[in-house]
Image 1 (cartoon, one colour):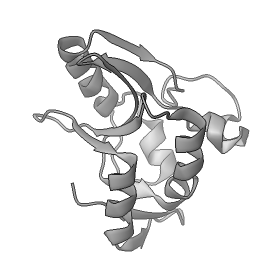
Image 2 (cartoon, rainbow, N blue to C red):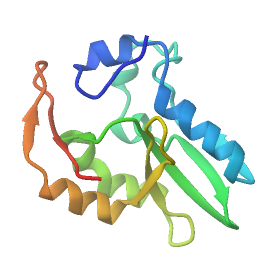
Image 3 (cartoon, helix red, strand yellow):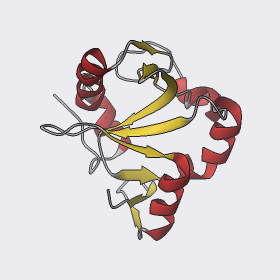
Image 4 (cartoon, helix red, strand yellow):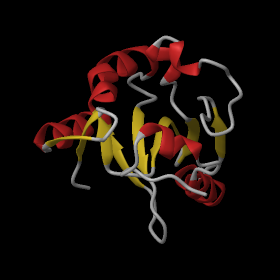
Length: 146
């Protein structure tokens, strides 16, 4: 079973498989000289009460990769739907994790396509251009145009 970005939180995370991260790992094995998971895998984590952790800790970048001689911190997304609360803390994530030489980027991964990498400043721009929507569980999000 896999989740998708049109479902509420509990439906998405009841899935035991994250296709976007699997697609990203397949790409990284072909293209990167180094790839390591550094963030939490909420699908496989057995951490009870995970969402009581500080949002900065919960939102550790998913991976660190070395590609074309450069390091990148990567958050993997399998949907163009971005939660408002994630965008609100994005400046803190950039400050906490990114550096001039090791940027934080987002990889949007979909079947039959190469990952689409977006820098955080571009992601903010795309998000601001979107229209607010609300899932059935009250979570506010926008669908960005990739």
